[in-house]
Length: 108
Image 1 (cartoon, rainbow, N blue to C red):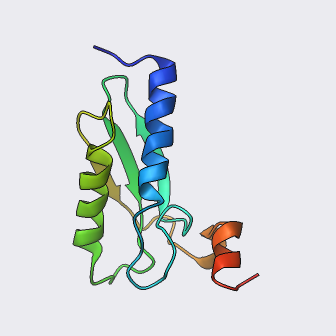
Image 2 (cartoon, rainbow, N blue to C red):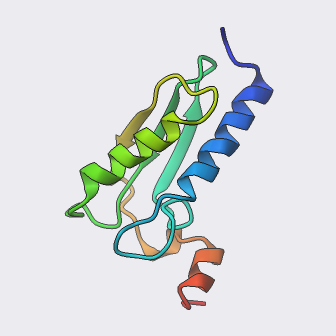
């Protein structure tokens, strides 16, 4: 059964909340506020497609971080399957960090 537009919005909000509980192992900021999540697109069947990046292409925990995103987002009520697309276009840089995270890191 296809999710309603309201249900899709709720799923997207819940996904963002989950992503705010996953932290980059090298920087004490969650991956959402760090700017590593480029896009969250939830299809009506409850299948989110998440485009994300890493702070560096050589990140030693890349596979684990992607797997953690899949597992945690998969627990969101209404999610049937999770697709995570890792990209480096555009490359991550400090300008992608949220203002809240910059304050937390003492960079503002």
